[in-house]
Length: 84
Image (cartoon, rainbow, N blue to C red; front, side, top):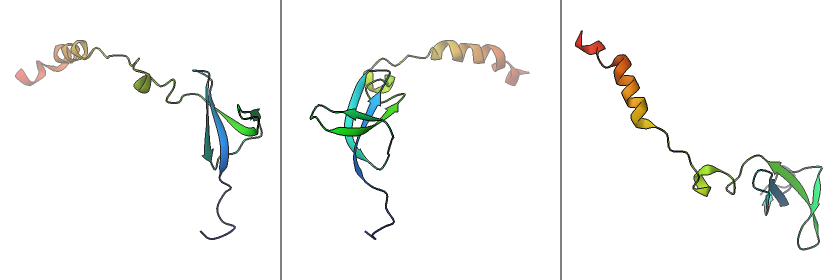
């Protein structure tokens, strides 16, 4: 890599406030806030609104949409237009 043009890449803690879970990973993102991790070291922390710990797709708590009701409503509104 060319020196001096890439951002610093280091350990960062991403904290999901919704699920109260934190992940230590490496990233180019930085933050002024810090947190003391389980290993005793201090890392920058970035608060995120949603992660794999709280997203419905990954947790299995996804809402099932009422597709049958939507199709029936669509057919009621627009289903007879082509017959005219």
